[in-house]
Length: 250
Image (cartoon, rainbow, N blue to C red; front, side, top):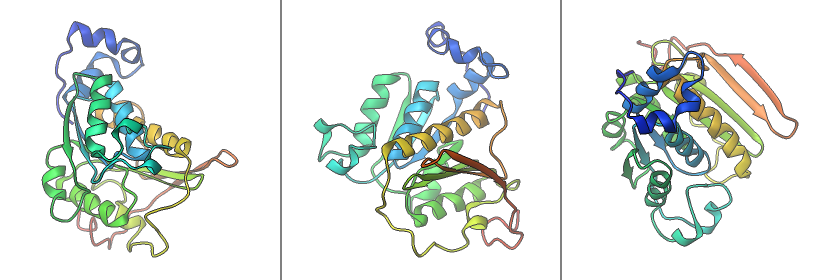
């Protein structure tokens, strides 16, 4: 992670309460200020991740998401608004985030992550939070995270279930260790409540903040699963696949 950038008096006032967190302090806040994060997709998950990272004082955010706001986005994509229907999602996200934190540098990419743009986009950041629903996008980010040795927070949900893990290349299993092949049953559209997206989004943002601020214990080498129908939370250990075609040579 990069070295911290000194805070202004205004920033000390804004972030005062979180600076009080043991193990974080002003040094942690300075590290956030100097950090850059990619949030892939600013939908139900990504909207909440981006909002929490902006509120916490991350210095730069790259947001990649194609398409325009449509009515079905509005039940869960909290950076989208009715007055922005038919307009680009990334621009709605940018204006809402800058309303919250005008100090935040935002780079908008009106494309989804793919084979042709993944390397260039990942090169711009220190950390990735993967909020993409499709495995082809997730695999692209995973490969670049491993190649460029950058941490990746993996978030996913379906119905009232969600899961989360933090990938540190060379230390933990990567996404391809967990899912060597694209799950054939996975679909682009699926049942979900915004509150489920928001729950795992907040947890994903917290993982990113711990890594960037260098405090706490990230969820590395472990998978957190949750079922919000009965509020069941479980954590299980993960093992690296030494023959993994993405990270096996690290």
